[in-house]
Image (cartoon, rainbow, N blue to C red):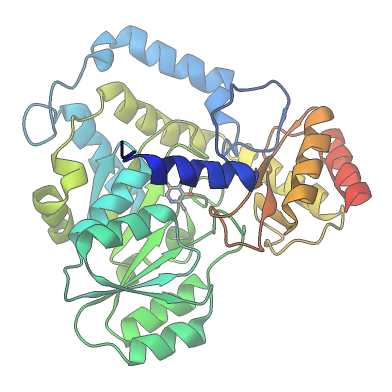
Length: 369
Ligand SMILES: Cc1ncc(COP(=O)(O)O)c(C=O)c1O
């Protein structure tokens, strides 16, 4: 009898043999150097109490949304939160999504059509690649953060062109030359879209805001599951693009809206962020402590993500195990999440890590490599 699933089983077996089979493990206790909870908000007692109090005073926030935003799910809480975010980021419009993945899917699947071109940094998040497939647009990769290469590609394009970058890259922990890329986008009349998943909250409202690039960027994606400690994302853009997404983005249209508690927690998250400006300062101090450990890393000296490239899978596993045995929670990243030969330990630093923990971490790593 023919086994239709043999190719699937073979693919899993291949991963197993290579030692890179992904499995779900229960959360362990330990010193957190792996989560995206950069500012500690996800477990901050004061923030959680604020959310609890908000729900106690407004229990209807927990009600199910009952339908998509276009039918019965468009509450006053979600629209008011969007208005608030629009003003905070000085954009014309904002559209909320239940996750950053969904937001990128909406943008890159709906905006480009099959005659258009999307030029992506080779290290752009998977959600953008997935969305490009859905749009059938021509996708061209430019070398990571290489403006010369991007310009060479831009010169050869005709028709509508989009450029996709992250402001702070999630796997390498380096910044994009965002102002130069915004200038190139203007020069070649291309539409720039910036994913700020890892910069938002850690660097104020992100780097588009910091460098006042709103006018030169078609859309910015900020996500709320990382520094803000909640969940969800917003596409910051103009009224026309917002309307286009509402009309044509499947990941916005064909899904039940999240409940109001999510939108309210985002709103409260902004308020909490603005009242707690010591957390990003403490995070920066901790990044400096880590960098003083003199570990070779391609990451920026100010980045909360510090990558240590260890292309030998066996050595990387051993180091991860040694760190785990010492009570540190750190996630090793293997291919295909990153390119083969660039496997790495991805260290996430947080405002709540102690100096002692960071010094101990760097000591163990230095002894190992
Ligand atoms: C750069 C980048 N964009 C988008 C996402 C997706 O965001 P979310 O986790 O909110 O779906 C992530 C999360 O891993 C990310 O790192």
